[in-house]
Length: 410
Image 1 (tube, rainbow, N blue to C red):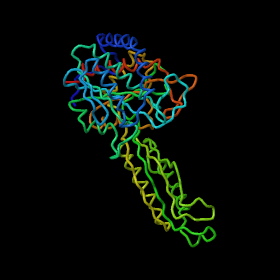
Image 2 (tube, rainbow, N blue to C red; image 1 turned 135 degrees about the vertical axis):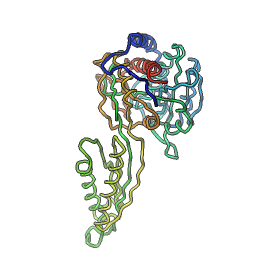
Image 3 (cartoon, rainbow, N blue to C red; image 1 turned 30 degrees about the vertical axis):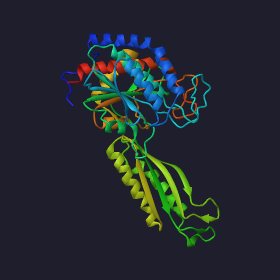
Image 4 (cartoon, rainbow, N blue to C red; image 1 turned 90 degrees about the vertical axis):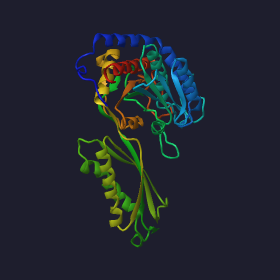
């Protein structure tokens, strides 16, 4: 990647021509607000699970085609690429899939599909992407690519998420930078959170089986008690973060469930199975957490038992490129006001946008969508958002693409 020289100072605004484009983006985006809300509600009513976004993909392909984009569909099973002019260097990504959750909201746009709902905000992401595409289609000689990605929430039978499949399909060919966003139910509408460096964690999971030798609860001396061993190991696991990892490096190991081979009070179990998650923000810490967990598990052998551990390594940490995050931050400051651009505290969420960032520089921001009188949690049957600030997301993405094409791409 080659950056242009003499980039604007992070403390100073860009030249007036760029600010003027920002103001234009705001006005145009605001005029699309009713369309953004309508399309978001359409997606919300018609959710589809990971790699099953068939109707969603077809709808998006039609919408992008109407805006004058060259559409390639399907890509990565159910996703699509939409290019404005040949050989784009900048990409905007939005995810498409819903979650296997039965919606409990009483809304006019409630999900019509049993046990499936947009409980994370991907419906808003798609609507914002379409509005952003609309804004950029009005610019002259501005190449850009939109990646409408399936399966951010889940993986296929080979353990590959939508981002992995999009990369396999060549979605990043000739692309030099990528940007995206996520609605955030903890930020007020009109607020955005952006930062350089790590903004979301790597997420890995594990299944740990402690193997003993069971027997009658009245004769523990004739057994190897897997329950006692697992209790010791859990205690040791809780010390990994506090004693093996620097206080300056965030990390988490959580044991979420424990299940033994017996549920009777007078039976000593043959084995105990535990499931947990590991979260970290850089590869060194990620590798060390796994190594230390392995070391703790070896205690089972010292105590007379044995163990089996299986890891499922998920998405890497989402790490924003310093330069691209600065472009996005300056766009946001001119659109929502500097006072409404907050420093993004790293979240222990996980996102496969990170897989693109491992190959090319990128930046990811959070867009305020908090319902003030009744905040909703993501991945919850009652999840919903305040739609009033969605047009800001479209304006910021569009303006960032313009800035990147002017100042970043060579």
